[in-house]
Amino acid sequence: MSRRPLSLLAALALLGAVTACTNAAAGDPVAATSEKKPTSSGTTRKPPPPRNQLALKTENGRQSPGVVIAGAADAPYNYAPAVMLDNGKVRTWWCSQLSAAPPGGDDILYSEGTSLDGPMSTAVPVFSGSGASFDAMHTCDPSLVKIGSTYYMYYTGASRDNHANGSAVGVATSQDGRSWSRANNGQSIVVPSGDVIRENTYGAGQQSAVYLDGWVYLMFTDTTGLASHQNGAGQYVLRSKDPTFATGVEALGQSGFQPVPATNKPRTRSVVEAFSADWMWIDAASTWAIAHSTDHGTTVTFWNKDFTRHPFKPVLIPGSWREGPGLVRTPQGHAPIDAADPCGRVALDVLRSTVDGGANAPTNIFRFGLDAVGLKGCASSDEASALNGFAMPSPERTVDVVVGGKIVRFERRSVAEKFARAVLADRPTGVDYLKVAARVPAGAPAVANPDGVVGLLIENKLWVIGSVEAATLNSSAVKQVTAEQWERYERHQDLSAR
Image (cartoon, rainbow, N blue to C red; front, top):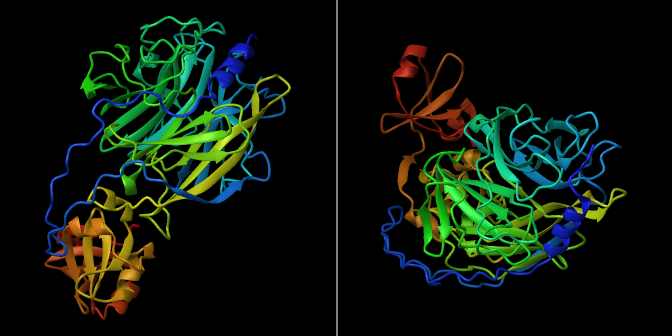
């Protein structure tokens, strides 16, 4: 079967070797942040100055010893991976082609393992061309987010090898990440804008999705976009609270996000001059991290939330590459939280193709990565969300645990440690802006239901703590109650769910 022209793949890879963003934002300064009175310490603190072009230190450079993911022996190429850390697994989806998966076009393969360096399970095709519609022949460039119990996969579709500006973005849904159903009635959700017809006739695609504050943010290539480079390079951003982008769509322009009636309206603002980019949200620093290919590897360009300022200078993940990177992300498309230094350090890991194989197309996907240090994060209540599950000293010589964006203050450190993923030696600034939801004194009464689940009664509300062990550490006497009595208690947070 005919394929996506290899010359087009090669051209995209060559043209994608561009450096930093050249589209400066209008009005670079950010609106001043109003002072807030912290509710946990009772003191007024002036917000720190906005981060602006801070230099991050890089440490712990790493590379896998070999190929991490690959299709079967007859797969001529492997590229454009999406990587998700999901419930203890490393889950990967990428673009390839298997003869066993009709029709004869790009397929999306799936594999999983427990380490970013492999080994991974045998690759299986999970999504292929529809045989009709905009994605009749090719499905490629997967990007995934999980919202509630549903996985959303955004992909590039094309109906033929000669794209003729016909590539477009589609979306499919799944409950397990393996069995997929096309959403939006099988129709595309983003098509080329047609602002400028260039020699590069790829169209729209190479998308990357992030779920943040109830919005799906979608970054993508559009070689016909007004703000693209003359070679077609450029990354545009749409957002919607509807994962199918059928309603409530906003586009990033020179004046920020503005409502648009359709997803193909003129594209006036590109956030980085690149092809096949990926991105993620760094909670601890309220920062977008965009990974894109440059001469010597993968450059990570940083933007603040509103795309008005670069909080950090770009970081380079060096090494060989032949096609765009796939960042290692959480199910919502966020950066993993560092267990030892959640406010100062972020892991920047990517999987990317490293050579052109026998078919003269990208393959041999390796892992590359490093740690970026010096975020100066967790400086606001929003950024303190990165500390969910962490314990730290409180102003009252007790121990605070951040739970669901609020503070639970424990009299005993041993009890706090029971519910914390880690204990920090120092108290981050942003925690002082969080509300104290409850105080857990030693000896607080406890109850247990017939199934053996134990909860503490604090201010007449039930805080589930799981087992009797935590109650014992807290010197809490446990009273047996009936299932009916248990259900009558007003519930608060489940402290055992971390």
